[in-house]
Amino acid sequence: MPLRKLAELILSEKDELAGLDAVSMGRPVSTYFDAHYAATHFNYFAEAGYAQGHTSLNTPGFFNLSLRQPFGVVAIIIPWNAPLVFFSKKIAPAVAAGNTVVLKSSEKAPLTSWKVSQWIEKCGFPPGVVNVLSGHGHISGSALSSHMKIRCLSFTGSTRTGRAIQIAAAQSNLKKVIFELGGKSPALIFEDADLEQAARETENSINFNSGQTCMANSRIYVQESVKDAFIEQFRKLAASRQMGDPTKDDINHGPQADERQYQTVRKYIELGMQDSHTKFTADSTVSPKDALMVHPVVFTDKPEDSRIVKEEIFGPVVVINTFKTEDEGISKANDTEFGLYAALYTKDLERALRVGKKLESGMVGVNCTSPTGCWDLPFGGWKGSGSGRESLLESLDEYLEKKSMYIRCAGLSAKL
Ligand code: NAD
Image (tube, rainbow, N blue to C red; front, side, top):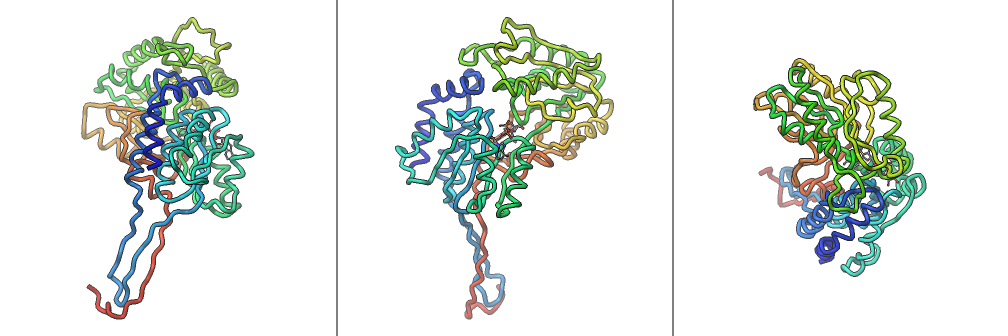
């Protein structure tokens, strides 16, 4: 079975794959879970790729049925921040559903996609079923978005690029698009929360992968009475990050993916420093500029309408603001064009359910934050963070067209 063989190979070569992402985009090998994630997806869809429709006897004189069928060629465009994760979570269900795929990797991190593509033939995939391109967005990506023979396109990346793809899809053949886009995820810390746990987990969320994570809690709202205690714990944790060469086992904070990404993050930090409420963390022996390294940065008490509160930075930069009442916290958390992941920390279960329901977000963590998730519930965003849902249980459906067939059958005249 090709999908299973690919899973086996990915696991057996996980150290090499980790090394390739470390050198191409700076992901520390010490944090590399991606091979395990990819193998789980290929193994699961090796078993779960059965597309089933329904039957219906509810129309007198008819025996009706629905079919779920592949689109044909599915295009896949992925970002650089966890390439093998997106490679697997999209290719496995799309192929299991009976499609062929053309995947374009990111120009910033093409190596793991290229490496795994070298194993496709020896795993036994028929020729042409899995095709991998390396290329830039405005050429290769645009060619896929506007291609008339591609009827479905699955994209993970920024909201800005998602918009360009949506336009290209509309102006070509109105292909179906599945979008996993950017975020500006909030975490609400209520005064009864376990502050040590909340600080540890929210610090990991924003600084994991050097801040280059779609669902990172980049906005933290702390109830006023516990603000100072929370910030102090958060700052200590951020300052203890081990920064440096991502190929070394004891490093958990690598460089930004490339010069452009580094400059973008620096630009936002400079914007954030334009008022007096700025606070910094972390000393390091690493020379930041040479190594494209950005130390974790904490800003506090920033105006809610400032750019660093509103825009996705995609770096290790967090804004910690405060709220007084539950309603104020919810209102600040929801005041964004994004809606990927929201978190809340409280010991009051009724409040957790009440607030969780009001948060405008595709995923909500209660006493946990991103990247915590699960394999089998829908992954995806509200508002500008996406459309479509992915997970072991959801993804297959995204890659199938539905068809209803109405079959006249004289012997079935009475409704059941
Ligand atoms: P990006 O949008 O710049 O690029 C993503 C991919 O799109 C790349 O392969 C790129 O070559 C391609 N692309 C660029 N312009 C294109 C165009 N005009 N037409 C077609 N393709 C084009 O994003 P990025 O910088 O690679 O990744 C970071 C972004 O991805 C962040 O916004 C992050 O939040 C988001 N992201 C979202 C999720 C999620 O699951 N929601 C996961 C990871 C990353």
